[in-house]
Length: 271
Image 1 (cartoon, one colour):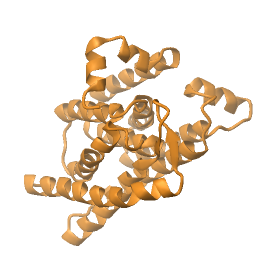
Image 2 (cartoon, rainbow, N blue to C red):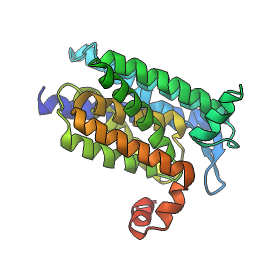
Image 3 (cartoon, rainbow, N blue to C red):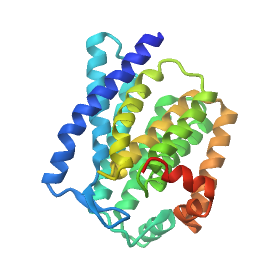
Image 4 (spheres, one colour):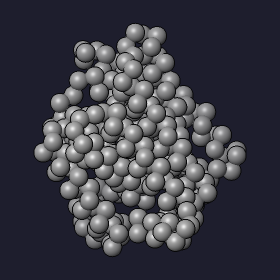
């Protein structure tokens, strides 16, 4: 795999996402697919459905160029499925129940919330992908939790414009520094291109990607981690993910960021 193919994959993602956004954002407005952001302003929501559309289109182009690998099918399945679950939660979800504790608490009482559906469905998708990646039983278990928790992690970030995407690029840079990449670049670079094009829309609060988008970004990070990191590094990643989720069950991530001068500056940068 050459640098040329990687750059081309990135450019394809940039171009296709630009076209998809041009068509999708007016559609969301016209169909009333909107919600109030943190400022109380109605803006299009679930704009993140553009990500799986862009990646599927990119894979068709890969086929025409002779670059397609059947292994990419798993990634496409995963991001499409979690985006669909996120869209359900975006459109049908109620915000009176939050966090794993709240959703699973209701589930144990026999009531399924959209957040509970997303958690259960996301867990099964993560398990399916982990089994498909293969390895020992502890590899499968470890990868399942990494993919599932990463998928939810970006949801936790996506409470202010641009925050989830900044988190995505920061965490991706760390993973890339330790990863043993090969053909995995060919399905992640179109997603990077798509996110680059979408970033200004999110940063300027012209639309919200919603769980339909943040789920995709999180699963992308989790899947790349499961494929390309060593066992010890994956154990470290899991510890980090568990720590963040335990913390956010008790404390507000937004308040934590606002109380830290450096984090607040990064969070507000570009808005």
